[in-house]
Length: 186
Image 1 (cartoon, rainbow, N blue to C red):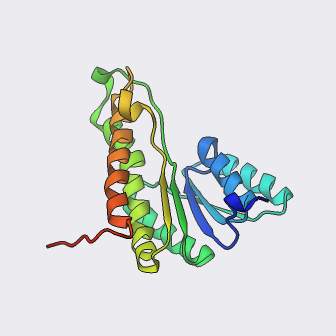
Image 2: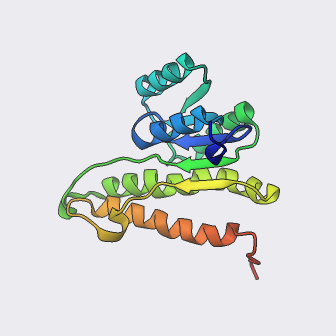
């Protein structure tokens, strides 16, 4: 294993980690030495498949069902993540949903759910671990957005808005997390 991506001794959390990009990140992190936990939402079959696949290679992966848009569920998951991993060094916010709909067909519930999973979920999970990273003066928050945050697409107004929100959130958070930032509430 190259030292360029050595995660030995690091603990990581990947939301939306049971399939797709999240599962690929989980596999990469685990295979490069990270102790890892994956959050998924009602996707036990894919989460278990990933866990078994990595176990065959000698890697341990913990999976937990959690709706990242639900503040109470995230608080409960945070307790379990910290119990299993201890401090979390790396958070990857990858949870997401799709749902092509013309703008006039997007209900308030569709809008709220899209922004809830993508943007609120990113906020809630980051909020759970970022303060400890700041205290330790080490940590990484990786937020998965999309090129559609910048260019938009027909039938995806709610998705594009959520991803653009993640981009803005990430930029603002990077200023607060930068070691040279002298930010205060005054």
